[in-house]
Length: 417
Image (cartoon, rainbow, N blue to C red; front, side):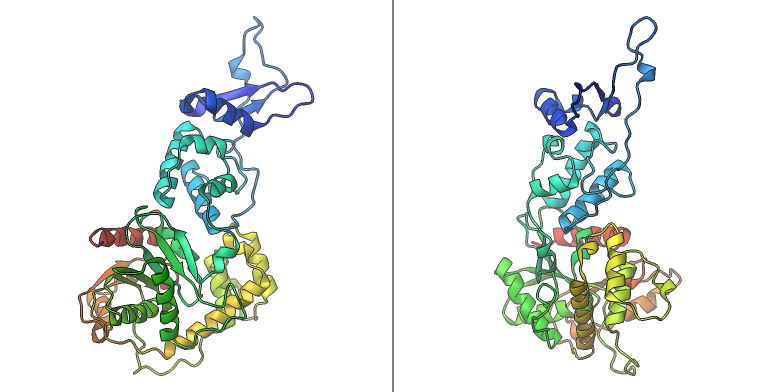
């Protein structure tokens, strides 16, 4: 099969094999399916007693990942995930060559189709032969740098002719998590995240209300898409922000298409105020939980920014690139956003609403779920629908639930412009 195409090479004395050069050189001369998946250096070819090539004595290629450098940008993080998915590996470093860790020409076709569908770019198998690592392929695709990842408007995918989907951050302020929707939502539709002001520039004035934030974000999205219909998605705090954004857009005479709320409900004024609002320490714990750290093992000791930065560096994630000042800015933004949440009173909005209800417990009756969603009824005059997602609220954008949410969003978006 394709996987057995291995080239055995005897380098000249003192020479080293340039695997990438050999591969791209052969790719120019051979059909794609005949380009070797791996190159193995030998001092000499093993021979049988009759002087023929002893195929059984040829060593198998070593398909292990030698590099463990984690992704430095969101684009690299998404590509690392696609490489790992196609190769069936738990993780892939940014400098691992696709072919050196088990890829072959059949798998490269699969990778090309996944990259095309995710990023909406034209790509050939030849590109994988010429740029076989995540780092090289990310450069070929163009796009983000480490600095871009904290900007207010985060372009996750800019290609596509349809109206974009704009995704507003939860209380943590970052929208990186929405990159998990890219595979499900067709590449004909651009995808943007909106992130809290005060991350890229920690000196910036933080918003003083949800309405303030919404005004800022409406200006950001109108710079990309001057007129509607506008498609908005918000998770947690973002569910309140998109309500305020949609209210402002409708007041300006614009059409709102999809309004998708990930498990956020209006604040219940009949309930007593919480004894304390979540603060910087809670933000640090949320960050650690997101990268899979067991936060329950930490006890009640206050966390230091240096310790959090160290843990993030150990994880194979773009989070590893956050320095202490960025972590401090995130913690402050989170505390400010949580304060704003309590002061927001949603207006009445004349459009439809789709709510994704996070509920892992299958025994919760449908009537109770419907009651949660109906809390929006005083604030929405259009149709209110809901979809249950079997996960907890903080984990809605993990791979599996995000894929399920993405499929529903893709279907709804297909019905719109």
